[in-house]
Amino acid sequence: MTIIKKFEPEQQKRQFPKKTIALALGILILLTLLEIWVSNTVIIYSEKFEKLSSLEKNLRMENQILENEIAQGSSLSSISSKSAQLGFSTLQSIKYIR
Image (tube, rainbow, N blue to C red; front, side):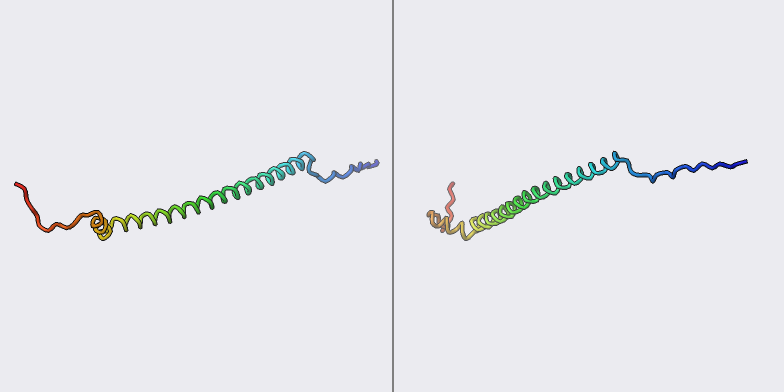
């Protein structure tokens, strides 16, 4: 009796299919482009935000100046000097009409 053993070739190492590699590479390129677009968008909006912040600062300063002018113009000393310039004077005696 003879024992014959057949030698089968070793199985090849499992390699990634080409489709999987191409898909992974495509996704990587897509994500890279998406990251570039997002960073550019953030830069553009940050510049707009900086301009709006400076405009807000200028408007707040102008508002404070106008509030100071209003307070100064409505003070009693300012009103009394303007009324004197217009010819108004203080009452000397009160006269009642019956």
